[in-house]
Amino acid sequence: MPQQPAAQARRARGALPAPVVRDLRARAGRSPRALLFGPGDLVVVTGLPGSGKSTLMRRTVRGTRVDSQDARDRWDRRVPRLLPYAVYRPLVRLAHYAGLRRVLRTGGPAVVHDCGTQAWVRRWLAREARRRGASLHLLLLDVTPQQALAGQRERGRGVSRYAFLRHRAASERLLRAVERGALPAGCGSAILVDRDAADTLRRIGFTG
Image 1 (cartoon, helix red, strand yellow):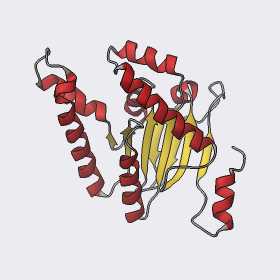
Image 2 (cartoon, rainbow, N blue to C red; image 1 turned 90 degrees about the vertical axis):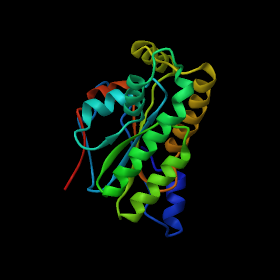
Image 3 (tube, one colour; image 1 turned 135 degrees about the vertical axis):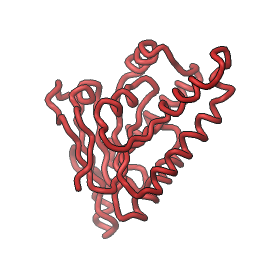
C-alpha cells in the first residue's frame, strides 16, 4: 500500500516503528498461499459474520486457534434444540473468553477469531503480545455485505438484522482506518484479504 500519513507522522515523532499494512485484495488469486508470523505472535482474524473467518481458520491454522464458533458448537450439542441461542449466548461468550485466557497463559502463538465489534478484545491481545515481547497482527476479511449474508445462509446460521448492521458499521470503520494506516493500538501489522485471497491461503503459521 502507499505510504500512510499516520504512519509517517509516527516516524517523524520518533515513536514506535510504524505498523505495516499489506493489501492482498484484487489479485485474482495471485496472492500468497501462506502467511507466517513470529514465534509468540498473536493473529486476530476479523470480518463480518458470514465472511468466512471460521472456515479460513479451520483450513489454514495447524497450531493453536481460538474460535468463538467452536465454543458455540460445543454448547449447541449440550443444550436442548428448542432453546434459542440468545438464552445461552452469554455462556458461550464466557466459555470462549475463558478458553482464550487459558491459551494466552501458555505464552505460545495463536490465531484468534474476532467478531469485529469487541475492540476491548484486541486491546487485551495487544497488551499480552507486548508483555511477551511479541507482536499482534490483524487479518481482515473484506467481503461485501451480500457475500457475508450469503455465507450466513450457506452455513444455515445467521445473526439478527440489528446485529448485522452493528457488525457492518464496526467492520467498515476498522477497514477505513486500516486503509489509512491507522491500525488499532498495539497492532504491529494488518493484512487485508478479499474472498479470492482468503480462498488462496493454505497456511497461517508461525516461525521458530
